[in-house]
Picture: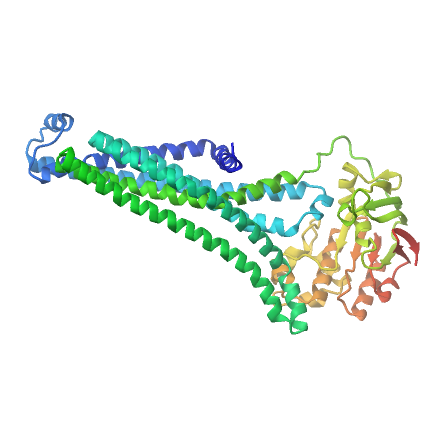
Length: 574
């Protein structure tokens, strides 16, 4: 089995598994719809015979009308028209029900795949997530999911069109077996020729996935890069480099459209050729009666719709399949952390937080089998209620040490303990419930101030909210907002300044509370006078949590009880 066929079969199998019983109902509706339309088309031959002044062809319909007492040609014509109209209305109602179910299936499958990626990312160890290519994740959750939704829709359309094709083919065989066999044989030959184009279509789709990933990487750097470019009057060259990614995507789209148009042209030409052959053979060789030949030509014209639909849908399906393969590969690469088992150890109250001879290296930062260590024998103790400052050069490992401290990363040697209890497994999960974190670039939702403050908090009342805002020097800021706590802050807090975002994030961390507050450059965008107010309020808290203050500014570190520095992977007194 080729990789292409394997991908198509795997995708079909996943969609069928997701569809379940609801998919079976949709298939049944498709069959009934096709049978209803086929029955209506089969009645066109006797209708044409009556309109031409002849008698009803076939004994079945003649006996049926006779049993109902419908004897005159006019009455037979009226009943035939009523029957065809009723069947056509029923076909419309059935098709509406079918399409609604299939639309829900299409949307549901794509969303299920998106949810799978999100849930796996949420359950994966942080070290694994941090090492992943973020542009790949963004592309998977955005563009790849959209193409999978399109592929699902195309697969559904192929299934529906195939059912209709079989129904129309049966009607054609009933009307004129030999002519129908000739027409279907010619269509099979056309289908075989079109199948050769599908390989090229999937190759184009693979190139499109790569180009879109490269564009996603460029997009994630766009705003930051644009700021640097604008500060140096380099916007034209920056735009040129960004447009190179757009050009690659556009090239693949153009190639796909060219491929699709070529296939459409082949189908259109083949349809005309088949019609001409059937007309010539039917009248010139087999001398098929005109009503019968007319009804067959009508059925064949209807049969061309499903054939064209299958051709176009197959082209789009194979163009989108590489996105499904990419998403499946990403999902397989995300390995969720094993579930925690056993009792959760008790974390002793009032115990110090200890980092003991910790060694940690990021594999991506080193070469071969000996990656360069970020921390090498680092040891540190934070006492209850102590405000400890941590500084060091960029890249010295300050954020890595914080990730180890909260249990997001596990040391490759040494231990992180609360008292004598190592922070690992279930204990790490329990420990994170006791941690509040405020970062340099805080994440804010496109929601109200209140909703952002309550993220991670433990059901605080309004008094607690305003107390936290006072400590973070953000109460006056919120009072000045147009709708106070109900004010929307914009995407990632875009309607606020950097210092305002940091103060709201500080208040959010204070509302969460716990035994350890980590401030990772959390006031770097706040002016010195406001920062002094914040740290004075933090020191005045009773009881006061242990605090790790990661900072470069000497003014910030001056508020701490003591300051240590990371140097060559070790913790030294600053």
